[in-house]
Image (tube, rainbow, N blue to C red):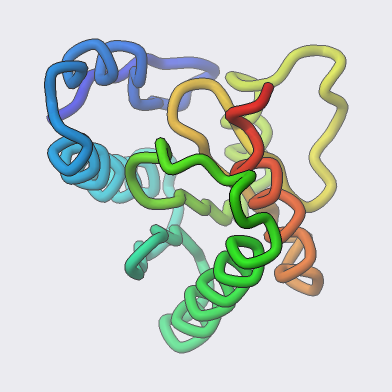
Length: 168
């Protein structure tokens, strides 16, 4: 199980509690724990919000998506490709401290999407057009149903934020 907090009717992982509970663990143990939490939470998030999302997993990423399995597998390959290009392009700017897999969530329902994002946003953040990096707690890339036509460039943009977020 994992600790949760609720905001705007959406249950989120309470990452501050998770981080304090896992301080003593090795990087490998943290990685395993964070991945277990994300795997379970993604399923709970989908079911708890009436979404028909499936969770796909690769070596470096989780994808929660509403698209059919075949298309989901293609998107997961795209995520890996975009990630690899960014790792090569950014090189030493990426810190080795990142623990756990990248978390990319596609949300088809606009109401769920905006309630989810409200937990992470401030009034100055504006509105989501295609994607957003939610940087409170565990870093999560959120994609709207409106972003599918531009999935790769939006993902690259948000992943660049993710990789460079340690410098904020």
